[in-house]
Image 1 (cartoon, one colour):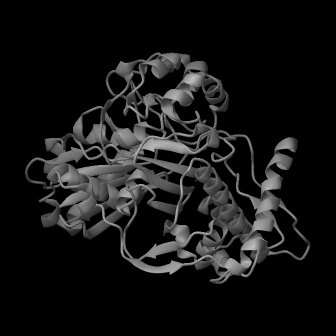
Image 2: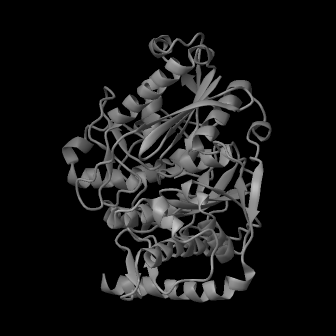
Image 3: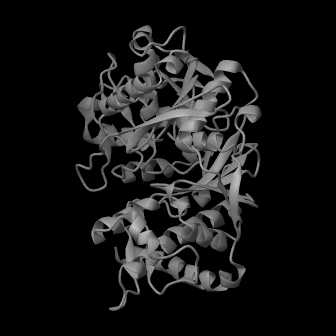
Length: 483
């Protein structure tokens, strides 16, 4: 058996799969996010460990004989977080998460140095790890001076499981400390940001064995024999492994808390001026590019909270098929935006609300605003030379045919919806564990899911949505001017 652990923002998902990648059982464990100040987002790493303990305890309770035959574990993880440890591996402060924007000034200062974009291949976004440490240095200097090691969230979990300080290429590519083309830490970028190489974990490929499970934990869960712990990947890279997306031009659109439009790349071809992310893939000698919006289903969740409705209730107001754009526009910048604006300060807005507009009109505006933002991402990817002929739709928002048809129409790209099953980041992590243990060709393990159906663009409505998109595009500079 093989275990995939997906350390997300709101919870941990653990899945146990057999050697063919068939999911036997899953366990989901939630934990909180703290927002002590506006723009701050933090978590206690102890909550990640506790969630993993609960998940493994649940797997042992329901499937003890299967868990006993565990051969390897791997990870998917929320990216960019800063987990700061002292020389005794004690956590020095709550981890600063990917959607924390407090380090906007530090990020801008780093990004003004051409070396960062040249070496890392990316803009230095406020959510990345390096500017977080610069913020800690500026505002919590006594604590900064105690930092002996910086780990990404899933790699703190790895440390607890194995005792080793290790990270993988794909997750580390989002720190602004890495030479992404060379797949190695950059001494120059570390020095420029006031860090040292000895504060960085050892790097491995996503399919490479990084260590073994500590004996006391194996005994606790009744696991017999040595359990390999495999590199793993950042959440989007692991998701790509879960849906078999690692050949040039393979792509998916993910409607989760954030929104992602991702394309696999055979080579390293960064284009930081577009605000597209170019990162190492979890599969060796492979990269990927993606556009990211920070509030996708989070925008609908926010509206649901304000209206006292459930997100599914609001979504049901729209039906299953698009009929043309509404009159209300929504900018989904509730936590700032990455692609294409790289703007941590911008905030969301409604425009064009009439006295007769209610829950349906606001819901349509939110759903359209997210789809328009993903079209922004598509335009940015096209500017890099990426061509997507079809996409796989994943994430909770892909359960809405209305939303998927809208995105397909705006992007003029068919979207395949997979058959029911677990095709997310946790499965990708489990597949990486299989490859790491067996040495199998990733292409043999990381197959694409069977497609249940394909949603085609509505060509007859394309013009109306293009006009609405032009209105959406005009709103960002107007709102930016007054905020």
